[in-house]
Image (cartoon, rainbow, N blue to C red; front, side):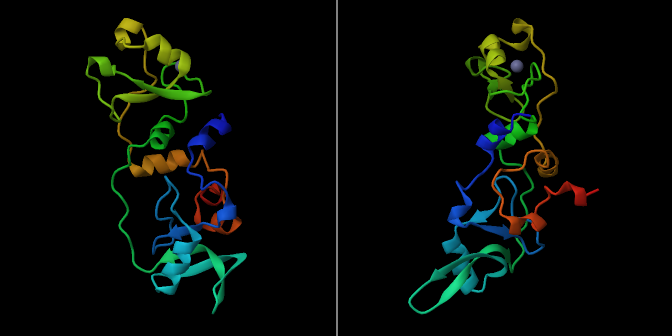
Length: 194
Ligand SMILES: [Zn+2]
């Protein structure tokens, strides 16, 4: 796996220097994985003051106002449960994730782009069923041809993934920048899963 490639697409709040808070749903799972639910520290502090969230863990850094000083929250949990989305968002990252960051024509895992199976020039749409991850050479080779014309084959039929399918995929592609206080709430520590 080319980790540099996948990290380019992983949601990444630039750096932890910005002190984002991991936002958990009331059941203590992340509100979303892709992108990972993170709030700016200002929003986390505000929500905490408004009583909308409980603070589970904190950064060492302190935010000061003229009257108070508080530790910046690193993990917060919503007091009200938010129903998770039933369908996976059609995003670049989710599409690459569905395809395992692997060219769906030749199986390579280098730099990746998209390919419309039915070319757009022939009315192909930008949908889960018609867009696949593709390496540059395969993308070039296929061009505006149909699969048959290009004598190319797909490794698997592209379909819309369910959120749980993406979640399972996501175990293999953790973002690079995770604060240690988040780890207990993420599934990336798969040792605990077995
Ligand atoms: Zn390829």
